Every structure is written in C-alpha cells, then in structure tokens.
Figure 1 (cartoon, rainbow, N blue to C red):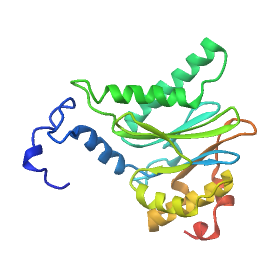
Figure 2 (cartoon, rainbow, N blue to C red; figure 1 turned 90 degrees about the vertical axis):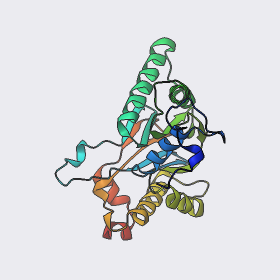
Figure 3 (tube, rainbow, N blue to C red; figure 1 turned 60 degrees about the vertical axis):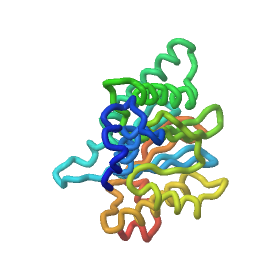
Figure 4 (spheres, helix red, strand yellow; figure 1 turned 30 degrees about the vertical axis):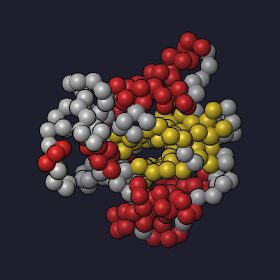
Length: 244
C-alpha cells in the first residue's frame, strides 16, 4: 500500500470521520479488501442469469466440495461475493430470511431489487455509525423477476447498480475488459459460462482448473436455482479450457 499523505493521517481512525478532501478512508480500505478477494462473474443472459466464482483453494488438504462461493437466497435468486466471506455470510443469511419473510407475509416471492436494497441498507448504516466498520465485501445478486433476468452488484458503501455483465474480486479489471469485448446481446447461459471460463483461465493462468470453479444459474423457463455439476462444467467448457 502506498504511504498515506501526511494530511490524511488520523482520518482513518473512525468510520464517521471525513478527510479534508471528503473521503471516508475506512470505506476505501474495505473496497481494497474486495479487490483482494477471489474473482466472481455475473452475466444476465437471454434465457436466465449466471454466476461463476473462483473458489481459490489455498490448501491441498481442504475438501473442495466444502467450499461454497455461490448461495441460494430463494428459488429464483442467488448470490456470490468477493472479499471477507464471513461478512458475506451474514448478508446472505439476512437476505434469505428477508425472502422467506416476504413469502410468509405476502404469499408471493420477493423481487430481486428488494433483496438488494435490504442488503445495501445495512451496508450503508455501517458507513455512518461509530463503533462499526464497513462490510468488507461486494456481492453479486442475480434473479428472475417475472420473466426478466436481473443482475445487481453491491459494494461496501451500500451503493448498487444493475448490470448486463460484471465482475468483482482480484481479477475484476481483466475480466471486465474481456466482458466488454465479447459480451453480446442475446447471449445464452451456456455461452455465458464458456465466456466466463475463458476469462477466468486468462486471469488465473497456470493456477486455473475446473475443480476450483463454481457456477450456478436461474433459468427463465422454470425459475429454479441450480448449480452446475463437475460433469456439466467439463462438457460445456471450451477445448482450450479443458486442456488447462
């Protein structure tokens, strides 16, 4: 990390303190934490929404199947995250409860934006309350509202945007460059998965393997969350990806 300018020293001691140039330094540190997290990709497709995440296994003794990077929030909504995953777990569990409360109260499924706003409301509170710290995590929330695929990204400040395709984590810049170059309107979930795998292969290089990749989607036709099996990833991956 670059040395902090003298005029900023001390302004990162509390989340509620603005620096003279109008910055909340603790929030900026949280964003840097996200950029050190493992890469995750989201794509809104013509037939559904897709999330692809790198599990980034750091120890060969870890049971790979025990590492979870993509979470089901409701039958038609899923999420992934990058940054401090224990922070993400708290937000995901909150979203799951919110979705179930909506079903019990209104006898209908919650829409994706309601879940996103609920997560961002909590994130925002943690940027202006003394004694707290910002959530060091960004999330991708994907779902089907009616017959319309929706993909949102939230960051540690509590702000959110809707995307057609986006990435978070350590490979964010490289992956987004690939998405801008190769994403096209009308892309299918299968095509999006192939694109995501190619992008991750380029970012991870020699460390890439299908074993460390987790992918899930919600299709418009049945609006059900499903995780791709290892066999499906192997079948759908490009030949050059398989050779890795």
